[in-house]
Image 1 (cartoon, rainbow, N blue to C red):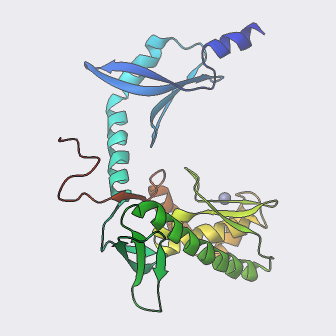
Image 2: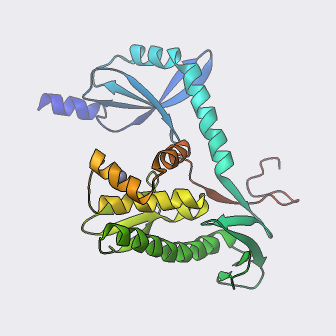
Length: 262
Ligand SMILES: [Zn+2]
C-alpha cells in the first residue's frame, strides 16, 4: 500500500516536464518514472523522453540527459526537418497526388463545400472554399479515401478468399492502420497523400491480419503473397514515422498568421 502511494506521488506512469541545464542552456525532457531498472531515452515527435526507475535520483537522471545531450539535439533537429518536409503548403494552384492521382487545388471564393472534379482527365481538380480551405480539403480527400480503401480491401480479400470486413477511416496519431475481428479495418486518411504503393501495402498488411492477428512468420508470408515487396514499403513507412503529411496555408506576400515579424 505504502509503495503504491509513493509511486503515485512520484507520478508513476505519468510523464512530467523536467528541465535540465546543459552547458547553460535549458533542455526540456519528459520524465516518466515506473517499475524498471535502468534509465532509457527516446526522442519522437513529442520531444525527448526519459524513462527512469521509480526511485532514481534526480542527479543521476540529469547526468544521463547531459551525457546524451548531443544525441538528443541531433534527433530533435532530424524530426523538425522531417516535419517541415511533411508540410504541404496549400495555395491556389497547389499540386497534390491523392493515391498517386495528380490533382490541382483551386481556391474558390463564395463556395461552401469542396468538390472533386475528375472526368478521367490527367489532372483532377479539387475546388475548395478560399475562406477555409483546409477542413474542406480534408473532407473531400476523406470521401475519396474511403472509396479507394474499400476497393483495395475487397481486392486483397478476394485474393485471400476472405469476406470483406467493414472499412473505416482513422486519424490516429501514430498508426497507419489497424484490424480487429469485431470492428474491421481502419485506415488513416492521410495514406492518400503518400506514394500509392505505400498506401496499398498498409491495406495488404491489415487484410493479412484478418487471417493472422499477430506478426508471426505465417502473417508475413500472407503479406508477401499480397504484396511481395513489403520489406521496402515497411522501411519507407518507418522513415516517415511520426511525421504525417500536414496541410498548411501557404505564406502569402502579406505575411501569414504564423508570421512573427510584426
Ligand atoms: Zn500489423
